Length: 104
Image: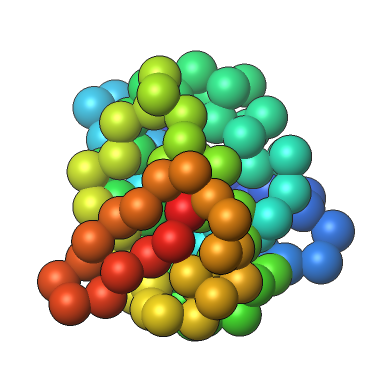
């Protein structure tokens, strides 16, 4: 794969993936099946980082399904805070980021 930027159509919300041989970065993870479908379509088995621009659900709500994918390794998650946990309280994955706990 050569360097590419993919902007994912998630209707309301945001998600973009930048990838090249050996690395991939996701910016925002909208709560849309299109995010997971894009990861599968791009044949990504690792995201070196997922950066969440801000805490609104339409930018961070898709983080939980990403974290739940056992076939996807995620190197780092940056920019998430307590409000994501409040938005998705019944999830099966919990991630501890510094002093922030993200319910997933």
